[in-house]
Amino acid sequence: MRYINPRRIIAVKMVTPEDNPLVTDSSRLMDVWFDAGSVVRHEMFKKVRREEQEALIALLLQRGFVQSGRLYLDPKGVLFAEMEHELVGGIVTVGYQENGKPVELKVSGKVFGELVGQLSVGTERSFTVQ
Image 1: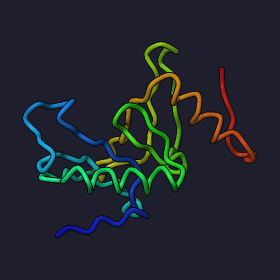
Image 2 (image 1 turned 180 degrees about the vertical axis):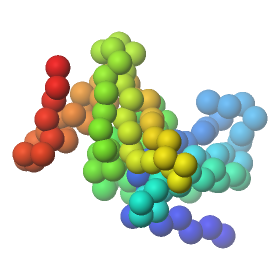
Image 3 (image 1 turned 90 degrees about the vertical axis):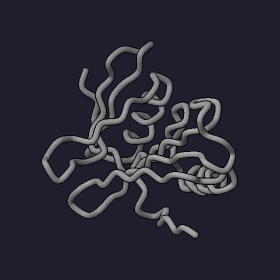
Image 4 (image 1 turned 135 degrees about the horizontal axis):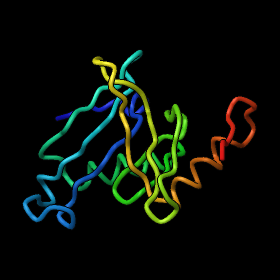
């Protein structure tokens, strides 16, 4: 049995048999980034069932997470984002590790545009620099 607090998740990447032929429906993987106060913690969970992944995905999408491939990201957890190229996508920073290094996640160009749109709406603190 396992409990993962979905309210603390900033991002999660699901690994399925399509991504890695060594995993099965009962031994999938999840990389999860948690908001741990002043730092971001990364944990990898092994032997995750397909049903667990699907239930977590449904919950995260309901909470407003955006999807970039198998990566699900909370727009509220983004500190800043930088576009590399429209075709390549961009990098979003969701926090810092204990050693001070940034936690950066790569997203597609479409998702990057969606994130910037969500972050720019209704807030006077976010802005786009060109």
